View 1 (spheres, rainbow, N blue to C red):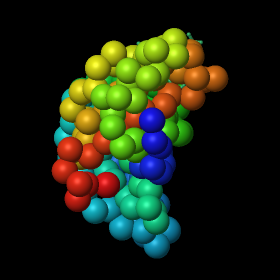
View 2: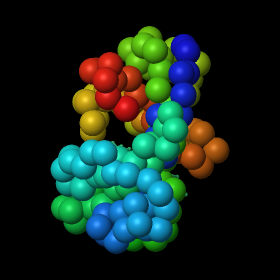
View 3: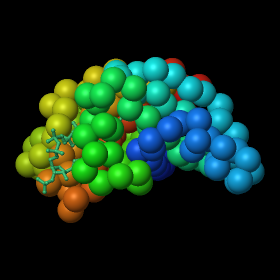
Length: 137
Ligand code: CMX
């Protein structure tokens, strides 16, 4: 498996609009993409070769809702871009690393994604991702 970069840091927020004010007015950054995805509203803010992914729950039942209820706002996950996500998932399985997703699935922003389970990764929720469209970050 080749890990190419940190693709994004996922941050759970109560309000995407409020958080965007901080990142785009308080800090000199820009939001380049927002989307609704599986009960969440997500905003992508590029920082160099990586992004901040701001995640707001909209459904009342997303993984972000559960995280916010337990922990409040904060860093939710780290995503690594890999060169071949199918091979990467098989490699992790062969190494006995606990996965949430036994097979890659479609994620936000045109990515194929698979999560490892935080109980097997020192308490850090880690995602592998690979753009399905090479133009996506
Ligand atoms: N980081 C670290 N630990 C986390 C965590 C996170 N983001 N989310 C949950 N945990 C921990 C919990 O604290 C809990 O630990 P304890 O047992 O010690 O209390 C344990 O994992 C189980 O958590 P839970 O609150 O009971 O929640 P679930 O087991 O129902 O789900 C998880 C946890 C990780 C399997 C689930 O959130 C998941 O499948 N996540 C992947 C998908 C996701 O997070 N999507 C949102 C991001 C959008 C995207 O980019 O796609």
